[in-house]
Length: 353
Image 1 (cartoon, rainbow, N blue to C red):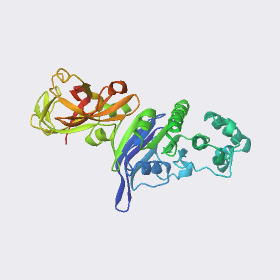
Image 2: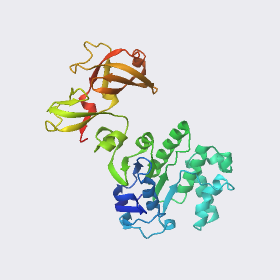
Image 3: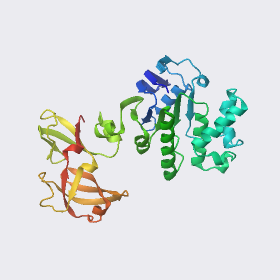
Image 4: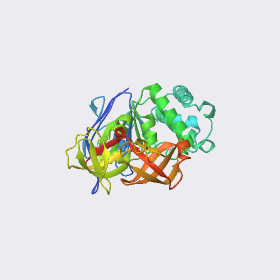
């Protein structure tokens, strides 16, 4: 196992700053995901770690040792790409053995290692098949086995599942996490898929404009985003513009409707963005008692079925709100029907607009 550290990393391509003053620590044996929108610099960071790009400024350290000048083929890092990059004229076994052969490993040893890692990814019965004879998920597992064959200190994965269909994507990501945990290998995983990052990571680094906006556990980032970008990028959120009325209430929406947020800590009169998670919006069909102290009522405008939950849009005096409700309950919420609305303070955050 190895620790990985990035210090004040900067990389420009012409006038474009791909990475700007980026700091990141990956503990030994951790899986850290770089998550962000397209163009935020996450793949550039991965390529710098791998040695395929050279930073303009800053250091990359492996177990405390600066490796900026170490070429890619000597960094002892395994990389799995978005495109599987398998040799089409080689079998799965031969693809796995290739890197070992380049490193001068003896034929018998590399054969034993190929058998071992193909068994690890559950492809021992497909060792003699060519890439075109394998499914997309199987090809990606061969690519993973190839990256693990030479026992790298660090595993780098660049959007490894984006070419797979939804069901296979879930299966392969679970396998990646299981293998990573079993081997205890330090891993950096690049993705734009929030569910993917949150489901397999020890920590997630949210990136935007070449910088890490926040790093923390998935639960920490979802529950306590550090800024407006993170709050709106992660999950779904209702955003209202408001003004602090007092220490327990904020006047929000076009009509200045009061939203109760006890002990929020913002000064009276401050302009704020009121962020409300859909699961914090509770619906009651009793419009007389359902507002539960807020005096807030609304009208159902749309349903979006998402399986176990349905996302319901409500037109209220605060403006449009989205609420996540159990799908069984949503069946009783007819379009255009009046409802009472309660906003749970625990699912509400105030931020600078």
